Image: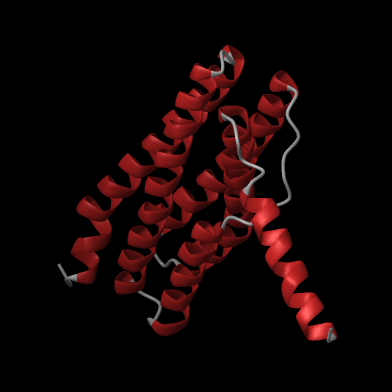
Length: 183
């Protein structure tokens, strides 16, 4: 058997093994928690780039504030891990990777100014909506598993994500969109 064939078989076996490791709600909780941990880590790298790309001082401040919140959210995930006794998997959140890449493309392709600021808000809100859905699902799983401390900690983060989304909407409506329209 060629080394290529062995590699293909090994890859298929590993892929099947990985796919079969999520068998219980607890497994799903661990996978989902690992996924959002990766997502938040990716945002700690993306938010500073978004802040630097923004020309609107309020938007720049919103990104900087959310970066601080994101660090706190990562600490909260660590607290959930400790409280539940789970071990996070080393996975990469592919969904967040795509959202971050889309935001970076906008930074690279749109001239700095109000139009880019508008695009950055849209990109950030896509991220917020993904995170809101993820934390909502995690809370439901934690509730089903009887992990009350996890429900509380994840609920705090969910509220922060919703608040950030609302702030971005207000910023878009009240300031950035008007600047982009030249008003």
